[in-house]
Amino acid sequence: MTEIRTENEIKLLGTGGLFAYDGTDPAAGVARLEKELDALKIVREPFRVHRFTDDYYTDTGDTFDAQQILLRFRDEGQTGYVTVKKPSVRNGMGLSRREIETEVYKNEGFDRMTVVRDHAQHYLGRTDIGKVPKLSLATVRAEASIHTDAGRYSFCFDRYTYRDPATGRESEPHYEFEIETLDRAIADDPQISRLVAVLEDKYVFREVRDSKYARGRIWLVTCRV
Image (spheres, rainbow, N blue to C red):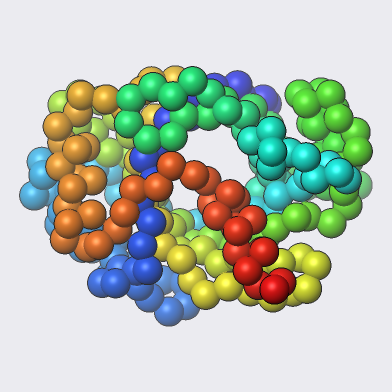
């Protein structure tokens, strides 16, 4: 099944601070988030923790970055998602992008590159996709649906590391909060504005307007120097 939508998200990046943890269990940070959401009277559903790996591909001439195109395969075990993201008109708070995503099942005979190239051909008109990913990310995500008086959002707490597929080198952990809606701009929501302020002022996270992939490209340059 393929979904075509516009994602709108606020991204807050930090070194972790009180939310930093070793291993794969974000329970302490989740408990802290729950208290902050309750204090702001933001209704929340239970957080779910899942782990996945993202591989980002580009064309053989490596032109996607200049075009602000992202081509990603997300591996969640038995299922995966191949995604194209393109620039979108900025509207409201955060970062807006057009997203085309297809869920795939890794049954017998599944070939990742065939799926990635078919997606690129169909939605980007390109077949010259390199076999080796440009960048990989390993993520532990705690995610919950939250509700304010103004709307409903997906709220994620991510711990992720970059890996350079060409050298095998890995980065230190990074931490990020994401507040996301689909097909609706994030604007004029006092509860979300207060949540952002708490994460910035109390926990020293900062809003960023670029993607994990864009920041990972910079990391690739610095780690190959």
